[in-house]
Length: 393
Image (cartoon, rainbow, N blue to C red):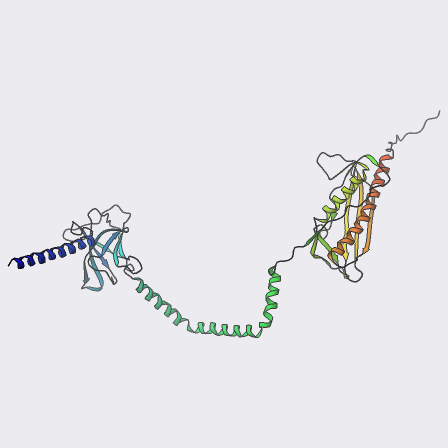
């Protein structure tokens, strides 16, 4: 008898532990579901797949209760009534929206409440649970949404079967045309790249400078003369860094693989000023500067600075020079020309020929400038005429 009593006690203890475990799990699952709850009824107009008694109720993402009952509406088979119990004090308002949500990709469904903006509490009538109307689309699961999307996609395909067949046929014809013209594709692509400026990166052009004409040792001096050399004038085809080429038919082009170190007009100005300074024939030589008073200005016009290509290639330079006084009057002018055959028809050969010509033309220009300025500076200023008759002595 004593042994049987012990077995009975052990069995009772085991059953008590199991019951306590079930109660604890239920308590955890319902978040104090044994406490007081405010009940609400949520009406769904669509299936609530997976929703069970005990499913969580979330308010703005926070668990506030659980589902306490589910029922079908006998008058409307599509309608499902879900009764929920939430913690007292949950701010359910008249415009609070209800729906279903799914926790995670494969999680269980929950009833989701979203707080409204109205401060008016939901009305409670005697003997009736307050009613919330759920969004008709809120109960749609991801699988249902995927099935609906596939059905719509199938409908679109069915409505556009003939256009799709035509498009596929056009693609087949286009692929066949490409196959027949495969040997021309490289040329077409290369042409498009040239037109749009694409393709392989161009090699960097070689940069060349002009020589300074050697005009030292010239006779004539004008130590009291201040001379200014403004920017030379030139056509736009010459006033840039490109080395100009002229074909036999007069067509203009430029070297693609070579260029001047600066715009041609700037180079000519700098080299002429440097050569004039080297002569030490003037009191001062400069570009136009603010506050600088000059006696004369050397005005230059670049008319030719080119290489004529083809058989018997030659370099040609033509500079027009004018000397004006402080009042802007032209007191003297002269045109300087030079020409020389090109030794080697390469960019370096073209530049060498132009430098040789510029050295000689520049020397003649400097000599003329020094001589003319010296003569003008040494000649007496004209005396104004009185316009009267000489008297007898």
